Length: 332
Ligand code: NAD
Ligand code: DAU
Image (cartoon, rainbow, N blue to C red):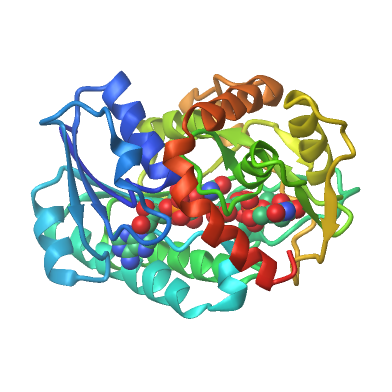
């Protein structure tokens, strides 16, 4: 594999994947990204000239997608509307991008006979009880809760159908919550870090008992690269790094790390339909493909992420005020 088409490569996880590829491989990359509110060309600053091209366009544009797919060896599909809270306010863009966009890419991969890797989420499995000893596996039945997660579930099922009916050479990965540099300030961890920088108290939904299974974006990238090279066609791999934390614990850790009392946060109204707990069993990826995370300690990765937001205010500042005014309107 010498050249990749990476959709959504100007977003959080996609841009981390492009930086990962630049540092650890010699592939060239075409990024196809619409640069929605969540995309940022500055997230690709510093990549070697000549190895990364950014094409600004929509994954629902069949002509553009066909031309870019034809000239790539493989497609890695990150582009999506990704934020649950936005999907509860206005689901329509989620259907367009996550369903029709994925369909458009699958048709191009089918027509041009290209390897396809679909990036998905653990949210397709719904949620677990807080006291459930179990974790999600590749066999867990789909049970999505939000407009966002239901469109991701739909896109996964399209990929499975295109493998079985049309022989598309595809794999799927479902990953847990990512953190790290270049994450939009609408998301939980960057929102709280940048609030503290601004002298604003962090906002916790409800009682903060909900549990997320955190993984550093670099570890997600190495897992995707492993699956792209060694994964079995037609298979699904769960990606996780044993990083379960309650939201309350995460907020308290951010506050302490940033030199404030652990209780200096506000409780705000809860997300409707709020999933209780996500937890990933990544045994298959580890045993069959030999992948291991590099950031086993959430504390270390979180401290590095806080430092990144302190040092890169110019990157996030332009989005902060509009994001917070949206949350204020929602009472969050
Ligand atoms: P993000 O919102 O930060 O980035 C999404 C990118 O896709 C943006 O650059 C945006 O401009 C682009 N995009 C949106 N609609 C597009 C369209 N129609 N055409 C072209 N580009 C478009 O999202 P993220 O958090 O980086 O998530 C990336 C992928 O990873 C998504 O598929 C998401 O479901 C999945 N995922 C995310 C997480 C997480 O914790 N953030 C965890 C597991 C899986
Ligand atoms: O599990 C993978 C998913 O993780 C991805 O598929 C999604 O794209 C990604 O956005 C993320 O979804 P979440 O809804 O879990 O992430 P979010 O950052 O929005 O919220 C994390 C938790 O924090 C969730 O329980 C809601 C809570 N929260 C969020 C915000 C923004 C708060 O308590 N306060 C906040 O201000």
